[in-house]
Image (cartoon, rainbow, N blue to C red; front, side, top):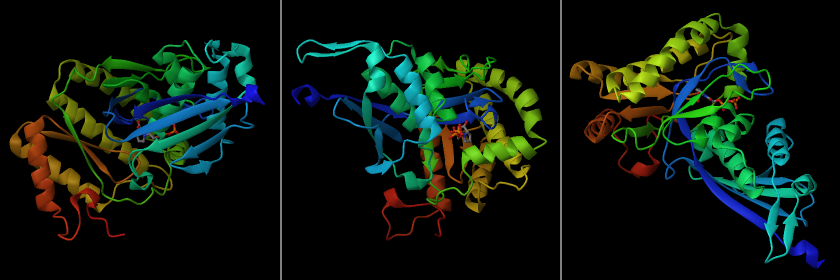
Length: 353
Ligand code: 2P0
């Protein structure tokens, strides 16, 4: 009837983030609690971001979600956990003009329709869950008048995907592993705002557009179960490196920043190799890119570019400034010349698939 005709909608956007000290391994799989702190840099909204619209109406009969236009099941525990957490923190909503009044205890009787888009192809093998869950949680929190601060929201996004908690903030962000059994202190903290170190230029080299073979969730579970190096990394090496990285960021010390970023990426992939059976995320092209950057940095005497690789072969390169970024692009084009018939924008480095 007439009463069922209203619909409320909120749309927000969230960018993805790139870890420079990696999260790899959980101590609690259900709450998604990590075994070490991690630090990331959040990209700007124009690249690799998610846009999510959440709508609520008394005429909706169930929660439903569409990802890039295709309906996906919401039955997964991670979605349900995020929805439950947000609903439990909902506030009253009043729109006098339209005569809509939702009491906070009534949100649990309403259903949501969620439409989310990535502004980059999911098939490019670039992380989309971080931006996706950050955006979903932020949109739902806005819709339901949740009063929590970003840090508290990050603990909810974390339960969707660990790395998502870091996408609630821009700039440089630390995900503190926390101590609590319930995860209340496993939250994201902003270390520096997006304007703090604006000289940096991030270049992503798409090495392969194939979907990765081992998901991060499965990969880190197997590493926790079988890698004997992992505990040493998490308990001894990362804590020291986190402190050094915080200093490097605070002082805009690119030499230290680059050294720590590269060492931590390589060590994360060493943990993958130490997993039984071993996990290979990087390929020959990834290794060539590492060599290219290492040789150039050595030749310059001081690092110009940092590289880091996640659970896939694509390189994320962080250049010291615009000049270094220009040189990097020239080098990439020299060593990986694009086939002339292709548009640069769709060119995939060394992809023979
Ligand atoms: C990171 N990665 O710190 C690390 C580095 C990949 C390599 O966080 O199981 O999608 O959803 O918590 O967050 C990717 O793992 O895994 C990731 P879940 P997630 O960015």
